[in-house]
Image 1 (cartoon, rainbow, N blue to C red):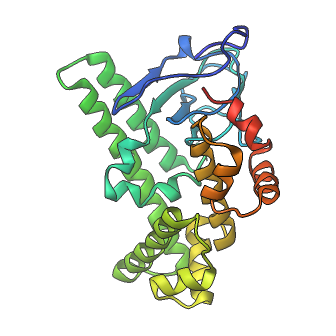
Image 2: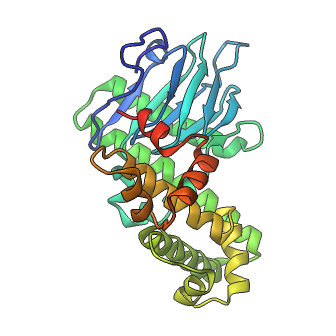
Length: 291
């Protein structure tokens, strides 16, 4: 990553496989222009940070002022900017989403994870503490440099996201007033619906067709779907289409028209309007933020 002052290449280009890239405090940029990339990025503001100058980030047009102990997630394709990290207290982790998508257990939770950005240490004390403990474990593993360092780090990362997944699952069950097997079955049905929408978002999906696919009435499906994803069916479908478009925009050989059609839109004007509303810029402008 490069600071704002370097105008020759204001974008990121970091190779990833199954590795975790750690950006230590002294290397995390003071500021960094709007950009997006394929890796997942995590910004951690340590609880022990001795600073009253809070770091400020922007993700998808929303500004986050971080407090000590906070963790901020940026998911693949999301426009984000480091607005102010003047005292360089932030520690960053970057890793490929394939770490999760290659494992079915995690793949089914990705739609839940992506809805999360800020873990507020003040309101979600236990969750923030658990996630920060795993981050410190990853940092310690790197410092120790024992055999299988990268494998140990990935295992610690899995443990971190298992904690996050369990928290989200418990929160969902609590909202529905369900327990045990009943909650697990409902959760599995909705995650299956999410997977189905993700894989078929370029098709003419309807609330009725997806409800039928998982065997729920449209009324019940709408209610539990929003409880789990915090979005309506239509909002979620739109989000998946935009995410697919984001991925395709990284391929410079495809025209904007081709990308619109491959993302489930039959009207270019509708695609441009929806994309701008979702990402705050046109597809062409968005493409320029990626290298």
